[in-house]
Image 1 (cartoon, rainbow, N blue to C red):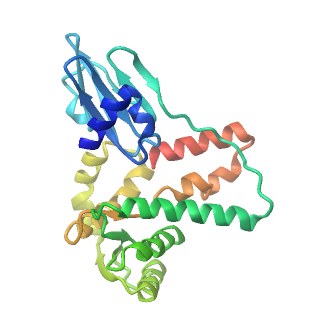
Image 2: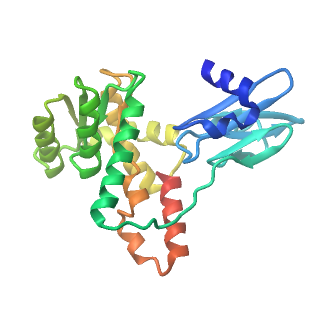
Length: 264
């Protein structure tokens, strides 16, 4: 937080353009208030008005009943009292030219490795969620390079010998991580579902379905580390979902991708 103040003192409200990572922030001075949200929208931020005063919160429920209308601050936007709401980051979709698929793969690997390294530098992230799938396995593999004492966490349904669990255990054996597992039952899903929906603030079926497993994974990981990496978002950004193949044109493909990212 002290770094943000230093950046603001140097660059003013445009300091948010120099931030890299996920954040939802408020910076207040005697004469100005700034709200900003990261470019992808990983951190939630909502605001509303009552009797001419601005209210904001990181949860929608905090403003319900207080403000007649609540608005979600869009990803990649900053709000100031002087300029109102404006974008500070916009995504430019383009297909870069590569001489070969191998060149594209090398660039992607370099970008992913850099992203993992940056998120492990402060020491707060000591683990990785491991589902047994390709995405989380790659992230865990890279994390082990920079965090030799990496802890991994896997959760699953009551089927103890499922393919996902088997693959996760194979990856654990290959990496040599300190590993933790939790197998949850149908009865437990019913018990935690109200909490999942409460924290998720959504009844969307796809979101809730994925959030149940993440709830158990986060609960398990919280007993052993302060932060974890995961493979969430790869399918949204890299077109891994089958429905993207059904897009009839580029505009529809981009809209489907944006919808998936917003619900991730």
